Amino acid sequence: MNLDLSNRCALITGGSAGLGFATALEFARYGAHVIIVARNGDRLARAVDQLRTETGAQIEGFAADVTDRDAISNVCAQIAQRRGGVDILVNNAGGSARGSIETLSEEAWQADFEIKLFSAIRLCRLVLPHMRAQRWGRIINIVNTLAKTPGAGTAPTSVSRAAGVAFTKVLAHEVASDNILVNAICVGRIDSEQWRRFHRQSGASLDYADYLANEGRAIPLGRLGRPDEFAGLLCLLASEAGGYITGTAINVDGGLSPAV
Image (cartoon, rainbow, N blue to C red; front, side):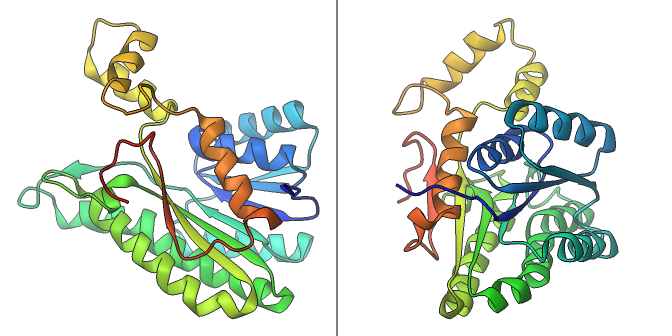
């Protein structure tokens, strides 16, 4: 199986921690020139140093807010000048916000859609000219399983992620003729910094390992996923080995979601 990413320029938003960092690590191991974007400059610098140390690969970092149009346009312009353009785009920025329809403010709705949907649309528009010109590209939008199985109290996250899946399908059809593949990953329970935050916020007396074990009992595989398992799928989708996969939203959740 050819997972080689040599000579490919990969841009990962939200790349300084969690699943974005795990993806950057695996992409670098498979030879990609990795560029990560994050808001926190100090955390970004530490992540870049760690990635370089662990892989010996070419790693760049840009401190930018993906909701800032001028900032992200400048990032893409610099990448185009240095590397020609982005070959692989991973739209990973954004957290998980939940509330009820009646209590969520308009500002909360707008903020969630800005960081998760509109920033992804904006970045796709910025990188597509290069991908079309070379007739090759990969775009991977990170959403979560709530996109397929929304429930009470899951807005705005479930709503913006569902929109992200629809956007993925529409874009995949629009760019397929230029050999640009567009897919979404519906993330379930995967061990990351987000789960460490959930553990702290829960006030549970359990240590972190026991907390994860408890959370994993509801999952058919009996555990949370590992970041490298998540990143491994992205390597497939970004590589030549995944060259016939486009327009789909893949669950990475240990079988927990009832949605297909």
